[in-house]
Length: 129
Length: 129
Image (tube, rainbow over all chains, first blue to last red; front, side, top):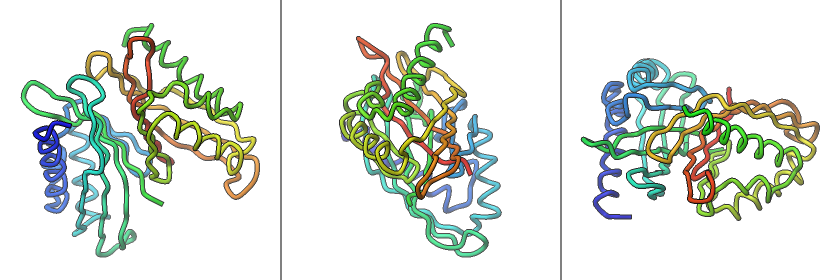
């Protein structure tokens, strides 16, 4: 993997992490393509950047209020010209409420090089048992 | 979506379903690319067609013995030339053992048009809560 590409993806993952920790739904959605797919740990399927941002703002304000996430890029490879698959490990610490505690998950991201930026085309997350 | 592409993906999903129901790990792995990624409902990450086949044969012979799965292609779109993202809903019926019962899941598949066939480059599954 080209080191510049790896840096770009790491920066994108860092942007997701920062937006989560700032409880910023709009910021969290920014790296997604406008028509992106998102499947969460409950097997719910969202579509479009707008829905992803709105859905995340909802959980940041409620069940994941004041939570802190840490993401680590675990694997990255190109599967076609301009298309990457990344695997990211997540540790989420939730201070209170029904989901209080530490939750580990692993997500797959499909990234596409658009003319102006690398964007997330599809995202799928699963809790690590 | 081109109707021929949709038929090809439906056939591939049907091949996965048949191989599961035949408890055929090698057959289940056949539509995967040699270097494919696979994340299961426990957040475990497998890599390579060979590991995917071996892992599935293991569960077909034990925890999912005599289980019957039904897959339904729920969404399909092209995200780049020769690269598709599919979302598939699964209903798994397990007749006995510690996982007896019905389990619903949703998986994302990233498909790549290789010179000789359409292959699964990445697969990620999550139980539907």
